[in-house]
Length: 373
Image (cartoon, rainbow, N blue to C red; front, side, top):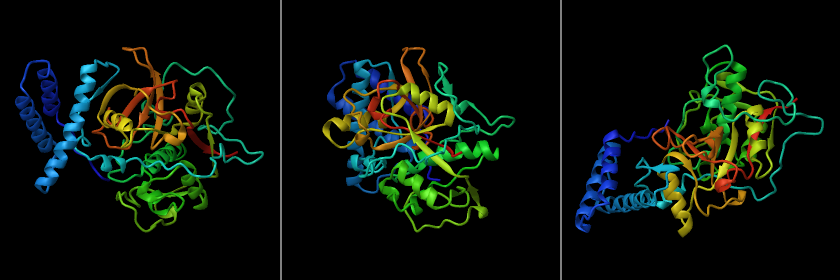
């Protein structure tokens, strides 16, 4: 597994001191020295070591751009979410673009894989009883398999410098099903998807339906992460029969929630498990860069970005909705979302985003899976 450094508490303290100092009348030179001092601490804490003077300058420029975004957010007084320094603060725009691995298929996306006469069974093997009133809040990260201590959502992982978010999101759904069915905590292989799903594009991105069709063609077999470890680069397919290390699911099917239907998403989450979703997290255009800087520096709170596009065709990053609720401080409804950028990013690898307004396209076409009956 590709690991990321943890941002130490003293770096957070230094950042807060820097932000506080901006309210004074410090000279430009003092502020520049403060930026360089903060950058030196950042490099030391995260063990970032530029290999040349040109790379040092490149990293400093990227760091400074991130810091400016944090300063701007701080000065706007937006209390709905917080930004901070993290592993990605000195990454270049092109490096950050490499993390965004959603590629929308050119052909039309089918809303379900169910055949005539088939039904999608809920996570507990039943037929959904129709729409009900969802509870006010729900969180799969707080749940375990009945009668065990096995979590239904496994620990946060990291995709590294590979656009494999689509694979990590898909595997999260499979791990949920496997935890329930096998009553065991087994991490499954994202690398298998990266290497073997020919309809996807390895570290250059993919999409839910392509990954699902690969799994179907592989007779629903997935190796364990231990057996087929993650490398963060696309390689030759090395899948071996799941009997040697992994699992074979029964016949699965998927369905897609209609666009802009947060209530239906809540019900699908409760009935079928975590939802594979895509959203726009910024790009290298002028307007998209601001969204990118804010999302990459997210630390806590309810994320929302002004002017963020909402169509599914604009989305570029895959994540997993694992819960929802209403923030007690702001009274803003939110989705709780699992990212694949390691635990040093965001709120221990998770983020919350405004619910019910299709923020950045997160409600533009979520998928869920289950056994076909």
